Length: 133
Image 1 (cartoon, one colour):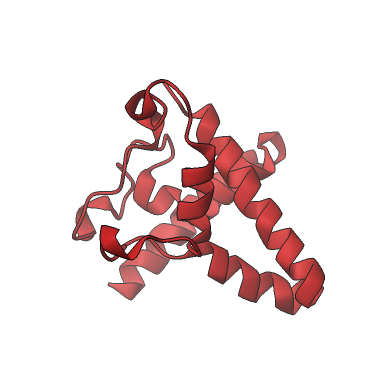
Image 2: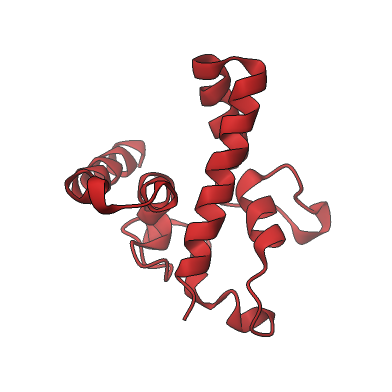
């Protein structure tokens, strides 16, 4: 399973590399961190979607399901993972905020790393907002 995930991730990253110069930071982050499950279009149809216990959310309909308004804070909080409500149960999605913070603290130090991680989550949230239908 881990080997399959790694191979799929490499394939997605290779496809992203060719278009990276034309992409926003949020889109690159999405392709690197989210597309393997949510799909390149964000519809929950990524190459790993069928391997998961619960199908990934269709991220293109978040605003529609929220009365026409994109739920920025909820999306940011879900990606960041620090504000998960225990009553909603466990999550299959990785806690990207934690992963970003660990990586960014090593690269930029504790203070700057936190700021960079927050910016990554913000840019990812903004990109997901552009996927709304």
